[in-house]
Length: 297
Image (tube, rainbow, N blue to C red; front, side, top):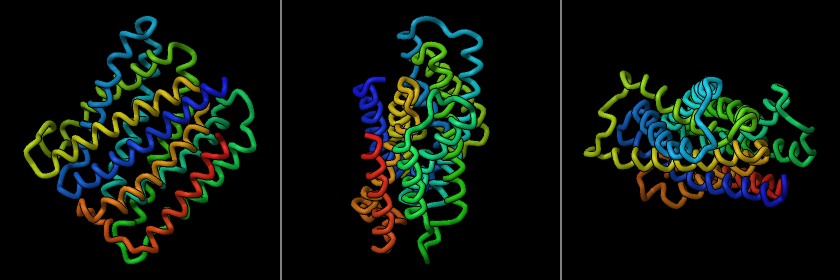
């Protein structure tokens, strides 16, 4: 892969991280206003599936049964990861959960080696960036004292979601480059929409409701998280640098912390009252993630 191609992937991941931060804060606000977690997952995934419908018509042909089966398997992993993410946002702060998702960078590298999908040994700079990302995530994710929202449950759910997303990101480049990446993305996210329909019996309120306080926020969250997933999935499927892309994507932790510091009190978020020390510690960890981005640039 040429340098320019790699930069395209990194820019997509950086933009996805910025948009994700907005989606996470909107989702946190929606759930604080009473919107249901299951509804948020279904709505976000349906919006995401609609975004990938055009991929069917711009791909080089129709999906085979094998591609549909692989897509359904990968879509199932995405559904699990997304459900864990929204559950983590309900249990913990957005400015804690989002940076914790940065463990993806090192978990992707681990899964690539474990599954035998790496074409060449990962560079020492990549391993260093992944290791520093883990240190930064530990610095950010340490629970805030006297702040109940920063719970062990939220931390574990966030790490579980990161592990599921990491497994997905390690498999998508392998399978997408065995066929047309655009068509494979349609198979993954088309199946995601269908699988999400099985959750309808457990939704907490009307799916497309728009007249309650949190409804606007859940729609905003669904749209933003879907958009960032489109960008990130394109970076993962079309460019074979999943570990490096995830290090860049870890910048979403920095964006989330900055957004919470700027908008937390204005939006009346519970985490808007975090102590300056906690905010400073999380910000310092996010700056360390910035160093990781420079290492792989």
